[in-house]
Image 1: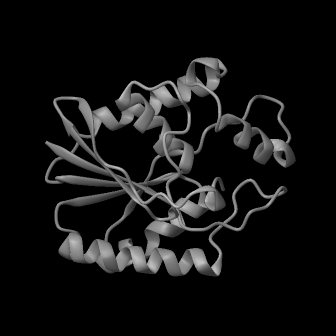
Image 2 (image 1 turned 180 degrees about the vertical axis):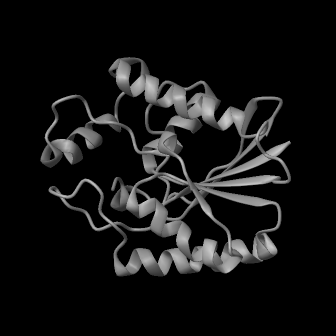
Length: 194
């Protein structure tokens, strides 16, 4: 059995003109607190591997724990946030994301559905590549986490819950089957997407 923690990034600097904002001062503080909590849960990171979305906000959230444990963070493009529809201007992405929150996965465009399938496949393969690792920490995004929870539950609603910054959603993986063990902290509407 392999354990996966899907960790939402810390608070990011929202921007309609920057498609890869980093963490705010608050976000950096959240990442430091997360590293301390993870150290208590997994002393010295023994048996734990670190994986991150290539987006700056996710990578920066992983840095404090990586430094604490002296581990490399594997950048994984499959853990990136949901892709926008082709031709959508960056300034319109926030509005588009908010519109997704009330939708069904079966209503989305093929590119978004395929994105979800690719990430689920990636998670299911983690057990095979685990080696000496019993746990994978995957630093990722709001929609990534919701896509996995919806798939595991067999629920077509896009938004399953509203994971707070640096919340940890725990999943177990056995023989390629994902099982939801524990949802991360849910803080409501004020922290949606970025």
